[in-house]
Image (cartoon, rainbow over all chains, first blue to last red; front, side, top):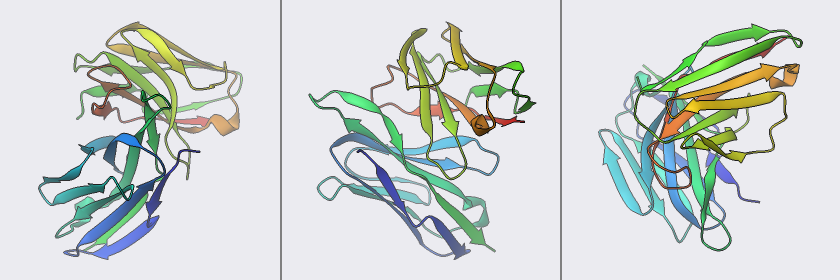
Length: 113
Length: 115
């Protein structure tokens, strides 16, 4: 069964701390997405990556294809970063075609001032 | 503001009611999606439309009926729902086909409560 595992499930940090959220998956993928969901429910796409590393402001996403693992880092965290961070992958189907996005359960981050 | 709007934002309905959720995207995208998000569970894909044609129905019960009258609008018609259908229903769109690696843009969701 293709699954996406995220850790930790919950994370509390003090403002200014460096934060890492992890995502692992089981088989070959074509791309991995990191999404942010605020308490109101809306979801925003942060990154889509298939190799290496991407950076946007204080957010950095890395992926290691061989280890089937990705990390999302937040530098100099701020209370406004408090949200649920969701990892999603697009698995490669048998035969090489691409499937739908499969989502992790999310990591709930709370940054205290 | 992602360019995808959903109405209503909150809906409470009885099990015998019929209601509809509406999604509209202002991005000129070709693919639209309905997702269900239940408490403590991952997002579940329900339906996918590409160029107004349904390309995927992810084993969703028939009490959920999607409609895509044009590439900008997507509806989810609800009838005789069960309390376990209470969840956040999210609409999303993407530029090109649903199985390509392109970013999905999500609406704010409709919080549905079935009594």
